[in-house]
Length: 354
Image (cartoon, rainbow, N blue to C red; front, side, top):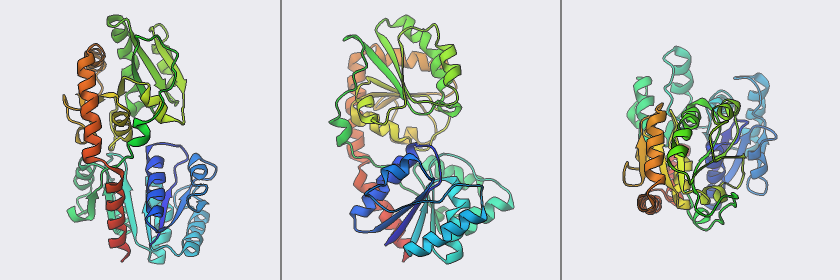
């Protein structure tokens, strides 16, 4: 097949990782892959020597110049099928594909409802041949928010992961004492990630556990507010954005993910593969990836007190941490192998393109 993956986001994140993984995996299966994306971003850099990259997705929704460029690129690559990765792609690459008669699969990475007005119905109800989500929770949200969608129009394909690089990674040297127990957050500093609750919870954790350390990997709009809240809190370490997430996760005892909303977060699978225990909020697809008390400690969102108590419970108990970490590794190998995700996308794309 000649497959176009479209990712219009300018910021690197979990969806970009999946885009790269699918490009490499489908290319290895013998398919001709082209990636449409934002010019000058990390995805363009990561696609060098992997697949042709078209840096054309920059501009307003339905911008005539972007649509013209997408149309030209689709013709040039003689696309059999398009897989859109971001919401913005549905207003850029997807209309151009539909006008050329190229089938479109729309992937929904996060648990977000569709709008009720006629615009959303026309956009998401007529252009895509199929919708794909990475969690049952996201599928349920789509179907409940868009009554015009039918159950068989939405498929669930869980994220897969190659666990080996995380298992074999060399831990990052954080410069901490030998007895340090390290909880870490890795991601963007934005409201929906619950980072303010984490900042508010940390003083309580640090006061109860003198060897507890918090490692923060990332950047974002809320960093200034987080730093203000954590100004007097002990043992907080800011490492900024790190491209080598494998080594960062390998250095953690506990991954903390206090989100309000997710899809099915890859960072949870990556942390479990690296051997970290997981403390996360029971939102969106996270409870589908991990089970409370078995592979992770799950808590309500928007609750700094519950977050602090959960971190203390896991960070203070080595036996519990080891049990969660071991179960997490086994869960990844049992349920979320990368080859199974590639199989599922290949099957869907072949079905739609045929």
